[in-house]
Image (cartoon, rainbow, N blue to C red; front, top):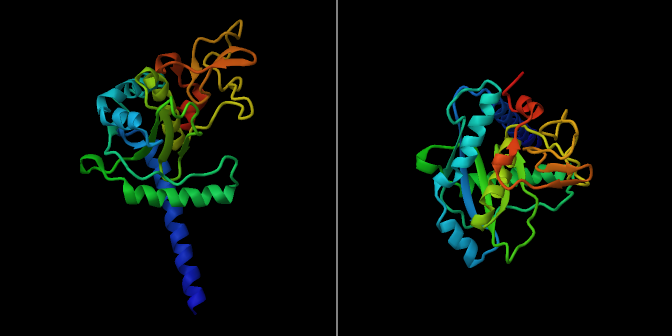
Length: 256
């Protein structure tokens, strides 16, 4: 009897999660109204420099990301003003659950559930309005943390864990990482070779038909790098050196 009740409860929970994920997917990519994304700053390395940097962060400092999405959306016929609107939420003092690189599917699934619960528990709603997307942005002092862990954006739950530098000189590069993970939450896939981090041709190239092919002038957002030579690519300094390619646009619902 109790075994059947437990199984029924588990099935109901799984059904609720599946339906919630489905409706999140449909709603987040219909582009009828702007999507609200909240950025929750977190001191990723516990340093005083990261703390100072977070204290000085303002919502208008993410305006370049909003303008980038508006400009790129227009290229695909989405004429909405600011289709993605970003808000700086309150700082979170608790680090999110971590996941080891190369973890298996079951581990990732369990981490996703734990992190969704963690996000529900620690993240408030900016201005009393629940955001559509939650981005937990961990800031690191580059002097203390010269290399960052891989960032993650998940469509299930519409949230991302983003690692960036607490350095104003790297704000442009930070914007690119934040925009990249934000599009992962909307269903965009990576367009680079995970073994080499080199953009995949043609989907990972801003101008895949360019002659000669190299060097490229821009990075495709979900490839993350500007192809300079066949085996060399550079990280863009800002979103001014980035575009959203047609395959990514299709994945997030900007085109059929």
